[in-house]
Image 1 (cartoon, one colour):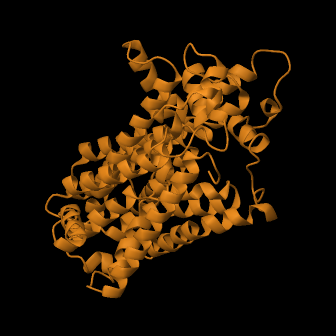
Image 2 (cartoon, helix red, strand yellow):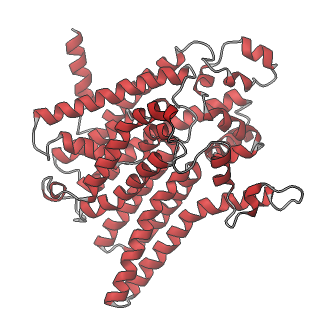
Image 3 (cartoon, one colour):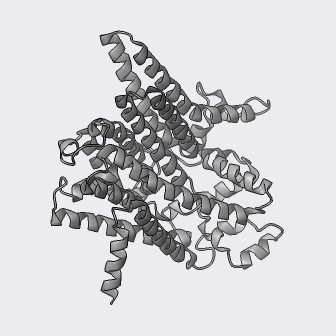
Length: 454
């Protein structure tokens, strides 16, 4: 009986003729499961920091003795900072390491203006809802991006798109894609930006110049906001730098043309939009800390003042090889599988395998080389892996990797045996998916209990 029910659910989840409905059902099932696991974790957990965010109108003592609302069980680790910043603004210098609260604060302010929110508990609830919505649309964005690159005409192409999006649902980011964290919003913005940029290449091929330019500039806005949410979003600026270099070379070797100059101008403007997302917050911080007189902070006298670099280095010990200590070996081991997958898939995409060009049929009406698209997307992911290994708190790669699509495609294409029916390779995908589910569920228990790693 149970086997029959399981097959029935599987059949509903794998309906390629209705991918949005199937992905929606899978998403709801997974999110309900994660919610139950986190909500079932007892009390405030190992660390009582969440209780330092008192309820509106309640004393700290009474807050600590009362059971936590379900929304507050998602307020763990950095999200305590996020909640405080969204409520009070940037009070402490170390809070300038986080920019995601700027986005959360916009939503909270809008709802508060309408009279629908009151206090940190409601702010936490808004953050949880926002994360769920962003993650859901990120899944759909990945499906659309996959269709742009691999096509969506044959059953094989549809399966690639569907399985890639399904893997994004059970991403190792797990609870961080449900909690008031920046990862789900970053994932949505970054993948949507990739979709728009890849679409612009298709429109370029089809001769739709105005639509191409609009998509490039809109993608730049998406990447800029993604960079505000998480600084590694700046890596997506590589797309603009790469295409600008190609256009400059074409102009130098083939001569000027109105078409090339126009496209180069749009690319440069888009790149500047992305870059501004790193510069503007530094200007705001400089005005606040370095132009008021009195004792100036050390970073104010730097050749290129950056509160972000200062805070990351001084308060969080982030820097080149700083995390390479004996005590952190377990965290490197925890991150090793994802780092290996990111690097392996990046090399796979850089090689632009011929199976992607010919083994799956037409790449939609665009005829834009999937290899060309994959190369553009492989570089930011590869850079992320290198930076995580050398300069970040390495364990966060398990969650920030969620916003990069290449590794999902590599897992799926490898499992499909170069688009051939291979039982062994399909078993490999099943094992990978099961490992992701197991990790995410264990992580949810640790997250809900306020236990590391975070």
